[in-house]
Length: 151
Image (cartoon, rainbow, N blue to C red; front, side, top):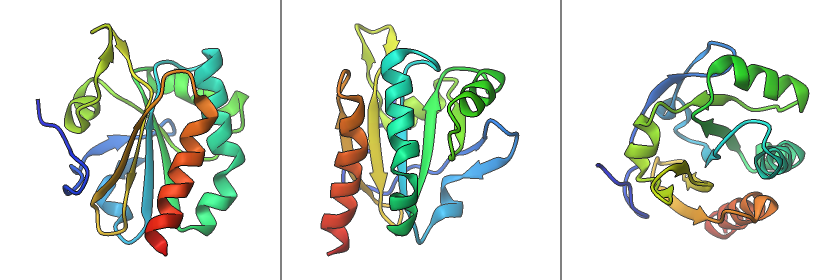
């Protein structure tokens, strides 16, 4: 398993988002990317986490950041989840490829973990933050990392 580390170039990937649009990490070069992995659509903590990114979306855009949510759920589930909670960022399905590229560990070897990565405008991995129960903390940590690095 390949595993991205802080300071490494983030692995590029190409996926379809919940609306069927092709999305490549390299398309966002020159901008910050906040890539957050979560276990499942519509679960209480996952919903709080996604909504915290939605609520901070305008501020993140002002910081020149893009937000991408990642879980194993299929695109139709993501589309319903995005519509139900008015999520303003793409959700992508992970068949195990993205979590493997980024070295996302599973809880008890079974469940996808809650982890947020921040990738800088040059494509370098700047932050990796694991926290299973601190849904709102992910967006705070991501914003702090961008602010710190932006000077």
